[in-house]
Image 1: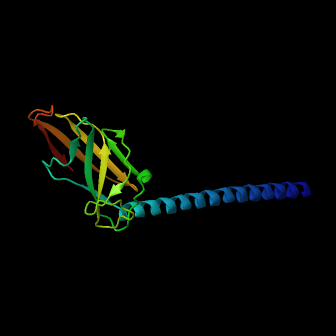
Image 2: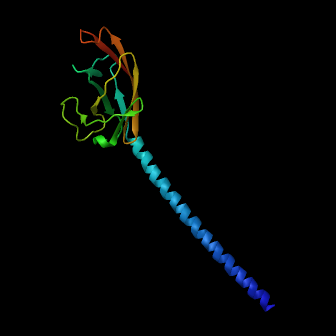
Length: 175
């Protein structure tokens, strides 16, 4: 009978040890999941508090210009419509035109022409993208800043001759 008691005691100790190990693993896993949820919640809060809107003036020829050499510049005005200041660092701003990354060098204050050093809620920034476009086509422009993004479609409608003899490009933007 002593052998049966010793065997039962050994099995009981083994079961308690296994249960303690499983409980430790579950506690660690639950802690990791909780930390991940906290981090994601903070990210979502930041995304909700930051927001942008691409502003457009349909028919404005100021959206797209070409110099005498035919090099194009797209000018987009973006308003910080969120509750938080946004970054002005160009390496934190993503601009895609038809899915192709386009670098920008700086955000410009449209009223002064100076480089923006702080982009407060309600302020408008001017982005200039060096890219030559083709008349008669539309282009999807996506701007992402700190997780907030907006998309606009730029359509270049040919108007007259584009060979430097007085023709122009009629541009419209749809947000």
